[in-house]
Amino acid sequence: MSEKMPKDQGMWNAVFSFLFLALFLFLYFVLTDGFDRLKWIFFINTFDVIILSLATYRIIRLVTYDKIFAFVRNWFLDEKDGKMEKPSKGPRRTVAELIECIWCTGLWGALGVTIVYFAFPIGRLFVIILAVAAVGSFLQNFSQMVARIGNK
Image (tube, rainbow, N blue to C red; front, side, top):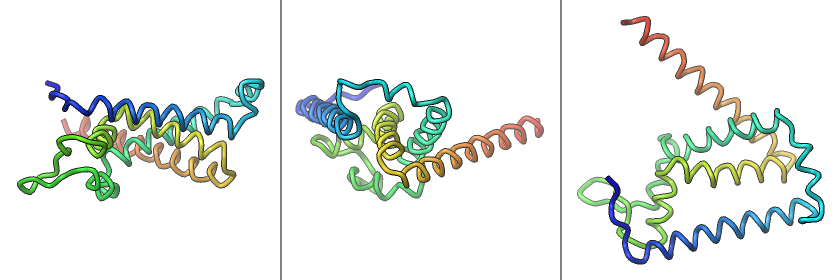
C-alpha cells in the first residue's frame, strides 16, 4: 500500500525534479560543446557502460542499504518512539523518499557516477573502484546462494 502524500510534497518533488534537470543540463554544457556536437557520445564504449552500470549499482546499495551510510540517511529522518521515520512534510521528506527508493537513488546515482567518470581524471579511478566492489558484491551473493542450495 502506498501512503498518502502530504499536500506540499508535490511541490517539493517538482523542485527536486527541476533541480535534477537543471544539474543535468548545466553539467552537459560544462562537459561538452553543447547541442552542436553530439559526436562525442559515440566514443562511449561498452567498457564505459559496464563500469558505469556496476558503479551505479554499488552507489545504490551504499546509499539505500549499507550500514556505513546510515548516518547520512538519518540526517533526513526523524526519531519517533525509538524508530527512525520520514518527516511528515518538506524537503527532508523528499530526500528521505529519494534515498529509500532504489529507482530514484539509481537515477541520481547514475548522474553523479557519470559526471565523476567523465569530468575528472581521478574520477575514473573512483568509479572503477566502485565497479570492482560491485563485482565483489555479486560474487559474495553468488557464493551465499550456492551455499544455501548446497545445504538443502
